[in-house]
Image (cartoon, rainbow, N blue to C red):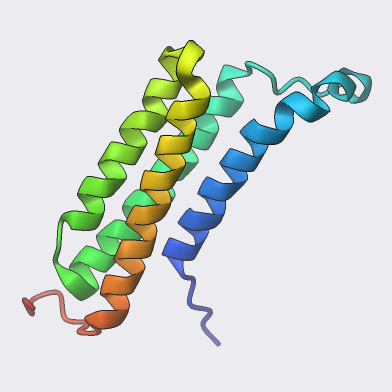
Length: 129
């Protein structure tokens, strides 16, 4: 039995988890050291999450492009979102607004890709819609 994974769903969940992580961190921050956890300003963790978002996003969008809709629109939306996500790492005074924009654009790209994949169900990589 083969399990089919919805990569757009994984991308949306990953983006929401990242936003929750960044939103709740200030609330739970005071108790983290009691448990020996240091994820505040941990660049390895932050860049790891960014890499995860990139890998999931590219895989999902590539699959949608090749197998279903052949449109660059979801990729363009994703690139804008990913640009905001990277910018958040360098413009720390504006990191919350940049994160919000990143999550909105990345989730929008996944939703757009998902809708386009459902609309165009051709699975041939050579067939143009």
